Image (cartoon, rainbow, N blue to C red; front, side):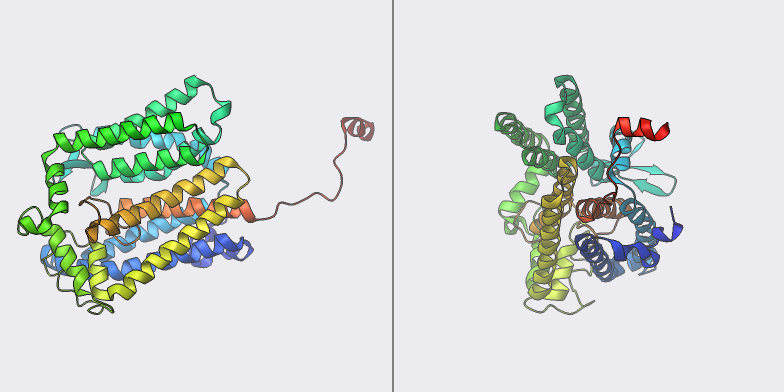
Length: 395
């Protein structure tokens, strides 16, 4: 592979891409650029207080972006069939790491949840990194469902179940719900009988209700969501501060860098509630622009899916849209009080190397599908020889 293709600004092959692939690439880079701008503002006060350097988190995020962009450009230039051949190995690796996080002493805890493992100074969150590969394997399974034996089907359904149970055990209900919803919707898009999908949906809802009934902190989150003002200084504090931030933005926002809620009023404002800071600084107009960008990204992704001739490629495109846009809407829903508080980052915006890698890998997969779905295949000018013709020619 040409090494110049690993760096986006030096990738000369882009001009030959299909129009959907080029638009998705530019939209991804614009999304990423504005995400860095917002993170710079949202993270500055907390970085300055914790590390004596307001740029601490921003500089680390830039490093992760540069690393992720190399992987991004590698994937958009690699045939999808080659990626699919190894996707199950990555899924198995991250599934193993998910269960490693559950081992006392190995899993790194934050907010009473063991979601990370530390490899030297680098924290690894396997539940984030597994998302693109979960999409790939779901597309592989459901895209050729009719041709597979029940043994193969049940094996992979069991593996998907282990992924969901492992993430739920951390505990991480929001990521479990997102991954489960992604698998279910990919199966729906593949045309699986509703008798399977209906039972699975009921089982998923019951599992979520069981988790909420067992985990006290999840029950408190649901109660604070229903009425955050009843305990505005306790369990409802985070949501109340987020709502104050969003409301303070009004129409045009307080202005870039002028958020008041980021001054230690709104907790974890650089990750799980970064949209609230964005809405405060850019207002309703900025929030509407972000939603419009997500709508354009979704539309392009659906066009790519409709153009895909290969059913697996089509399901990959649909799965990536579900993960990236679904996670974005869930994050925005939490920040605006439309959904219970969860720990989902906003793709391209929230601080975190694992989220950045997963987001750019997912975007790269969608662009790769766009390239393969829309770019013309070379048609041979000469009709291929028959077996007799080949024999005569050899003679």
